[in-house]
Length: 178
Ligand code: FES
Ligand code: FES
Image 1 (cartoon, rainbow, N blue to C red):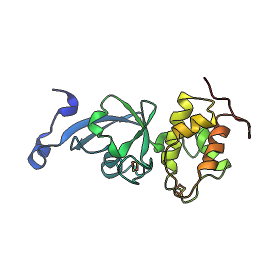
Image 2 (image 1 turned 45 degrees about the horizontal axis):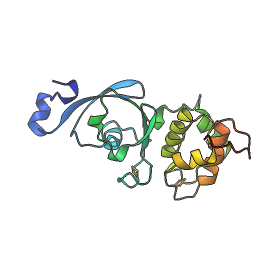
Image 3 (image 1 turned 30 degrees about the vertical axis):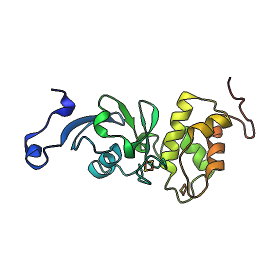
């Protein structure tokens, strides 16, 4: 039996639908028991107390819940955790540290991006996925990748901060690749 489908005895008594899962989160293997349909966002916030990833809409529309899975931006509110066995999950808690912030976090601070801040962890994870795939993004690249919603309207500062993190000079647009 797949180890991610193995059920434990006490759990079978209380919830016959629960699965025993091993997830790789921020470089650590984490074991959880959850309904196979439980979205990763609930696993992170409710079972693992990792609250840096935010709940916004719950229907993949806002991006507040964005994490990275094998480097790609993924909306955790609609991604069952049971589908992520063997994949590398990264959350905002592992993007950088206060002592060693990620280049994007440094740029976010320098450009004073956050307003209320609620959307920003998802924005940072989406931006990190963008820069890994496209180290020198054009405006069009940024527009295509950054589909998250910010109710405070920080979009312009996010664009500037992404360029700063990418080492693109202020005002220097990168020509779109063809
Ligand atoms: S909470 Fe997941 S996209 Fe809005
Ligand atoms: S900073 Fe407030 S929602 Fe984006």
